[in-house]
Length: 453
Image 1 (cartoon, rainbow, N blue to C red):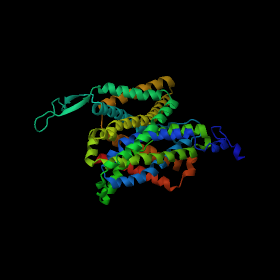
Image 2 (tube, rainbow, N blue to C red; image 1 turned 45 degrees about the vertical axis):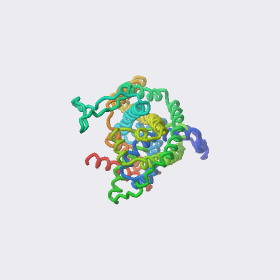
Image 3 (cartoon, rainbow, N blue to C red; image 1 turned 30 degrees about the vertical axis):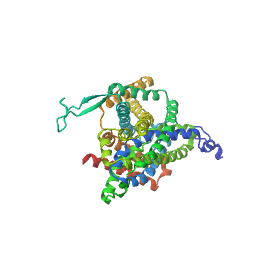
Image 4 (cartoon, rainbow, N blue to C red; image 1 turned 180 degrees about the horizontal axis):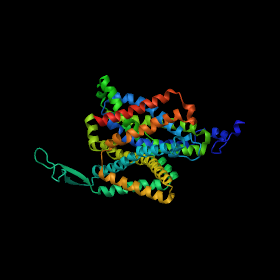
């Protein structure tokens, strides 16, 4: 009988179907996925998307919901298609495509996520550094120097002065990165608890901030209508940052593994519901905030924020006359970075562990999990710390490193798997698959065009 069917995880199918009802754990996962994506969405998307004008942003808002849901659904279905209980994405790739392809895609998976973790190391340092200087007033003034050590002067011959935080950057970045990593070391349950604790106030303050900025909206932006060529060109070139801003793929593997463990054969259906609600929540809150920021700032101000390598919230805090914005905007940025860091760190360490494990297996060497975990922990801390001290361009890293590989892993690889893997045959021949492939290809061509121009 149907009620006695047993899933590959040993869970009776009728119990899996009964578990379809929305639960507190589903809310926790939705908030965790939301937190993974929302950091990039509210920190960097308004800067790049806003510089193209208001009307292209409207089309982006209509596109990003289906793009986000369908792409992440495809990746989750791919992970859930494994016949081996507990298999993460790196193991599922090897199961379906073989050892060689498994190694290649595991490398791509790591390279898609690892640069984003580096971005958050830079972002958290810049956010707190800006808050210390501009809101707390703890700084020293030093002349801006050229590469050869000569001071930069104005036309009148005066020194250009920079404000430097009273806390050295190397110490500040080290303490912040160590604090964020310590939450991950404490385990998945503790991380989900901290994420839930952070996301609720984040959502509330984010919504309030979006509404608070409405009196500052400059409605003349609605009157500026670009030509059709400029309109489509702006949308095309912004798609990579749009994908990055709503990306929560680093958490999808562990999310899908957890659902398979809890719901058995019903895991994909449960994942579909959670991912759909996550996408709705993301589009609603993030795009409202993006529109509010874009309408309250000028294109010149958005360019200045990009040049200063600051998240949009830190820039708002520095230029807005309101004391509320000055103090709460950096707090939102701080919380958003932390919540997003957790999911990306989890994906990056999973990818790195998969690479090392596969390499050791091909060399006929055995790994000791404790030594491997310690190595990964040390590698992540040292590289995060070094990049945070160097302070490279955040948007430059997104465009050059994160975008193309995210598009390949999140948009193209699952669609290829649906076409090739027998376990995913039920999902073939759907228009949504074509939509995901087209948007993925548009992202990759936009990045290549941007790098070449």
